Amino acid sequence: MRVVLGEDLALLREGMEHLLTAHGCTVVASVGSAPELLRALLDERPDVAVVDVRLPPGFSDEGVQVALEARRRVPGLPVLVLSQYVEQLYARELLADGAGAVGYLLKDRVLHSRQFIAAVRRVAGGGTAMDPAVVERLLHNGPRREPLDLLTRRELEVLGLMAEGRSNAAVAEALFVTDKAIDKHINSIFTKLQLLPSKDDNRRVQAVLAYLTYVHHDHREAGRPAAGTTRE
View 1: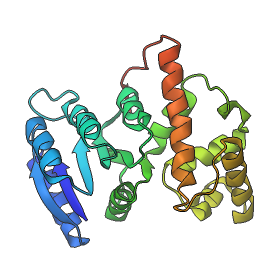
View 2: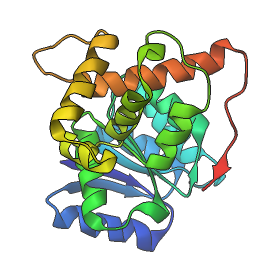
View 3: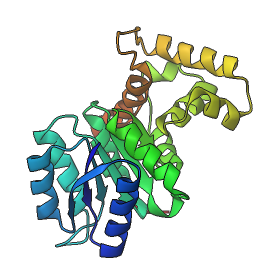
View 4: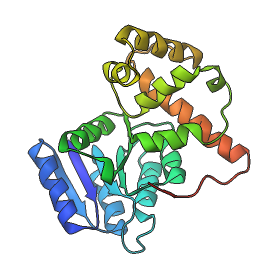
């Protein structure tokens, strides 16, 4: 798996590089500024990019802006964003194209290397890896519309845990129900969202993206600005 890293703190960047290499990844570029990151993403076309939200020269939102620009030029380019904060607007923008292959983790809540590597691999494979705090704000801040209004409260809880990249067994454990019950909820979600079986069976990703995309469009159509940056 070919990885591009974008992180301005040298020790953290080198630490992630060693960690990724130890787990069989090839770091094809490791950079510390937004201009370098954009060049690396467009030149290398990696299997996944790991990007800090705030990069030089401005230390505001350059990293995620580069990720958005790179995905515009290379549709579906897998991006895992690392942040100290929940940046709702940018998380929503990254998900809005419906291409999947997006992750958003809060640095302080990544508790062990296995969690990080699993998220990198999941995003590289076209899935989502969203911190629960990000999912909570995206899923519940703003009105919903059909067909999302058809989902029950429990189905919304299941969908939120799916957005974090959890397996059926992990969702069942989190909600203290059986695997069979989760299977029924997920099948109901697929039916209500009109997601038919396909050869690559990527309905889990489609279900998550459908929900987050609806929330994104609702904010725009209502003419209201997306919620501002919220410190976690």
